[in-house]
Length: 375
Image (cartoon, rainbow, N blue to C red):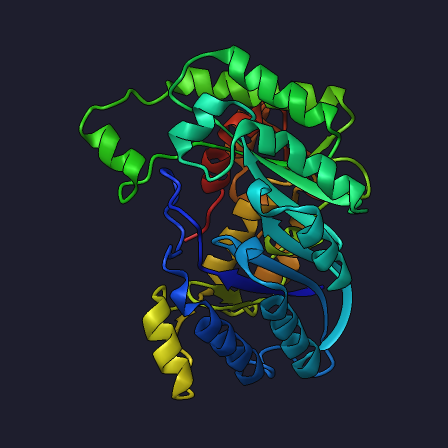
């Protein structure tokens, strides 16, 4: 399964925690969309011949900030230049953008799945994050999307905020699950250096949440979602059957994907590439017919380690036979002692064909994965 990711690097305002590439200068939107369409045409031979594109994902930034003609132009460019057999067409959206009129436009363009950036249903938390929407809009957005006929919805939530009050997180979880979106993505707040929160933390303006508090919130997330019938199919992603994210699952399974737009990343199985994270330079380069793209060739060990890291985070786990066939790595033999230690500590589950994390192991996912890396 192959997919295309479109990065839309515009936001109405800067969230205090975000270090993704974006701009609040919307004056370049028309020009940038034209250059995105031009890049799509330039990259039409990225995939092997006869490859069907099955997933398209608009991320950002804030893709829902685009007007209908922008989205239509980008989609038409994809359909003209690639063989498309679409199984999932996703748009990330902010709650304040989802009016009934906008939702009908998105449906008419073929979007079947929305990933809504709720982050919290608590007004104090939303203000701390500097989100553009309020708590009431968080609630309203999901209802409007369902009324518009969107059957595939995902809600984003952030935990680990510096208000060490479990009642806020409990309310967020109960509210989200009561709305039954079908899919929830939830990540711990990370304080990045070049963000407002990073600056405030450095100056001592607030105390970051303790590791124990964050771990307790993650455990609550697993407990509440499981009781509501959600499957934790990836460390940070929970869904009911039939609602797993196909596009993101491609990433976790090391499938090829093409990234379009400033700051977008691509992977074809042997190299990773990244577009420049600068809107103005991207527009100028693309206007001259030059793709501002940096290529990073990957060694076999790099691809193997990345597969271990991403696969171990999923419900499917690390395929031990795939490691042998693809990379010549016999993980059980190479890491016999490590595996025995992790089994004794009840952190992993192993069968003849797969290695997966236990519920306890999910709290230490990245560290466990790193312990299996090869040189």
